[in-house]
Length: 229
Picture (spheres, rainbow, N blue to C red):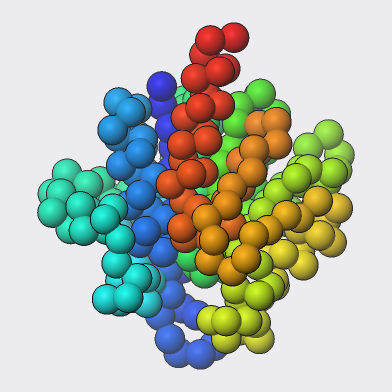
């Protein structure tokens, strides 16, 4: 099985002057879930190379076992430092795609024609897609059979309440929860910061950083069913 992971290349938090990027847990935890399952992994980002890590995600209070493992794992660090350019990646070369979150994707991947076309290509060819935390917002321009891909689908993502807690409601280009609702999705959520992921057909979404492991496991489970079928 071949899984593509797509990271942000965006490193500026709106016009705050503060840095952003991808959330380290949301990259590291799924990476190890997939690697431990013996999956062939390819990492990509719009600019290629090392995607920016949100420094807030690496603060002492945000440390997780997957992050500690990542810092001891030279192979993992090398993989993250050498992502392919997204424009050079083709959906037909992979079985599925996983988008880690962090605030970065809301600026670049959400509006990136290459990312939009890639997600549509995966989904149109009957392959599952998985997105966690802020990355479900990347689906805002993604269409399926003439309508928003998320229309009528049960989804989750970073909630308005969580965005309020991190005090970035006025900084982000849009609110993930509001945007998915606007597109006609059925938005579900747990309490702030509770791990939660949903599988609706071939679409898997996770609510927040703590949901990245369960979303990755759900994708493997779905792929196993597809392989069995």
